[in-house]
Structures are given as C-alpha cells and as structure tokens.
Length: 336
Image 1: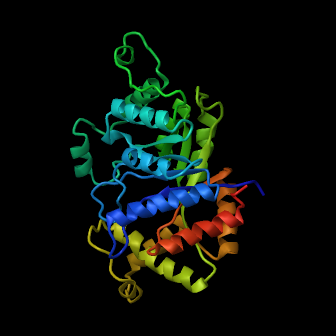
Image 2: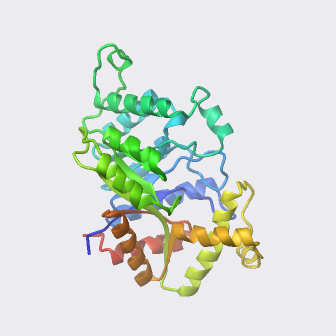
Image 3: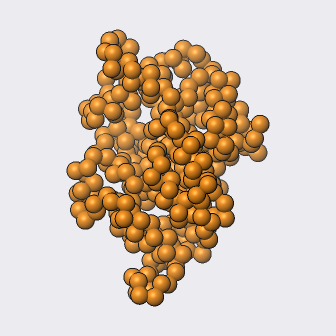
C-alpha cells in the first residue's frame, strides 16, 4: 500500500447553539492538532451568505492558523477568484508567503462560494466567463512570479511584496472545466469528491494527460477531497450519518435557518426524492469504524491514483471531530 498523506479541509462550521467565534477558535485548535499529527496541509474555504459556516475570508484566517502551527502548509481551499481582484489576491498571498515562507498554498476556485447575488455584490464587474477566469489566472501567476511582459499591465504594476518562495498554486474542481485550466497553467489540482462523487478519476486522468509543465510544477500533482468521520463506536457512526444526511439536504435546499435538533432529525419522514438524494449523497462521504474508514480511504486513493487525501469532518461535538482525525492519523501513521 502506498504511503497516503492526510490533509484537512476546514469549513469552520458553526454548530447548534454555538457561535462563529467558537467555530474559529475550534479551527485554531484543529490546525495545531493537524500539525502535531503530521498532516500535509490545512486549507480553509470561502463561503458567503451561509449562516452555518464562519469562513468567509481565507486570506484573513490563514495567518491566524499559520501562527497556531509550526510545520504544516496552510492555504485556501479556496479563494473563489471571480469574487476578487487578481492584483489583490496576488498581494495578499505574496504577503502571506513572505510572512510564512514555504508554508502557504493558494487554492483557487471558480464557483461563487454562495449565491449569485452575493457574488455580484462582492465583484460587480465579473461576468463569470471562462475568458475572465483565464485572464485572472494569467495575472495571478505572472504577478506572483514577478514576470515582466512588455506591453502588458504586469510591466507597469507589481504585486508587492514579492515572496522569495511562491505559494503553491492549486486549482479546485468538481468537474472537467477547471481541471483543464489547471493543466494549461501547470497548476496542481484538487478534486472535490465531496461535491461530485461521479467521474472524478476520469477528470484527473485527462488533467494528467493534458498537463503542461510550469515553473512551479514539472509534473502533475493531485489530491482528492472527501467528507469523512471515524469512530470506534458503531452507534456514534450511525448517529453521525443520520445527522449528516440531513445537513447535506439542508444545504441543497438552500436553507439558511438553524438546524433542527438531532432528535427532530431522527424522527423525520423523508419523501422519495429526499431518500434518493440521501442515497446519492452517501457517495460523497466516508464514515465508519477505523478498519472501514482505512479501507475506503485507501480505495479512494487507488481510484484516483493519488497519495494525498484531504478530509473535511463536520461534527457537532469538537471532541468527536478531533478524535476522528486522531484515529485517521493513527491508521495512516502520519506522525512519521
């Protein structure tokens, strides 16, 4: 079996009867733990107009998390580039890479990270076209590299500070389109199996075949993201699945209200469409006792031919979340 690296995707979820402040404090505790456990990287997400998630600004949260850890790479999973100025993103991540050299990742996505109205307010000039994304990616790559191209804006405007060590550039995708951009620009690729569990291995294969070596990456680089929960207690696993089934439906319905109690969720009588969605959504996560989780994570890594799995764990109780990561670290011997 290959040596599988484990990474964390933290969406800073706000639990029932909790607060955003507590969610962010938990993120600080979790990155310290991930660092101690020998995990590869720790990414935080960008979401907007979503009450259950505290992470709206990765560029603000990253320095807090990097200061709470010593070794682990810290980055965005991701910066939703259409919401931002390419110059400002380049400046932000140049500054972060100067503060924490060799530890910063810039993961880039093309989705709005929320509803279109919020996206329009964040960046009224963006039209979400492929040409716009291409131009933004070109700008970010050139500014971070400090490349001069005669007759272009990069010859006149610089993104200071220019870091001695560039952040690693990653493209996030749950479909084929963004993977093609990653291949064209010679960026690493992170496939979100936790969003789309169908066809990902084929997308990754096309990316590898189409990859154009860049200054940053001589060869294609891929990791895969998945929701996961591990516990020795089978009843706790079953309860987590019951709760998470509803959470995923809750998000799909665009609900912005508070979650019902676990007791209310257990008593729910789902209709046929909801049961169908629950069955499909269970392909987006891995849950079970340590032996089950290890087997399924290993199978996922084999399916995509990768050596790094990025795990997002939602749990109402922080100690359960922490314990799940500890079990996964133990089974994959990440401490080295």
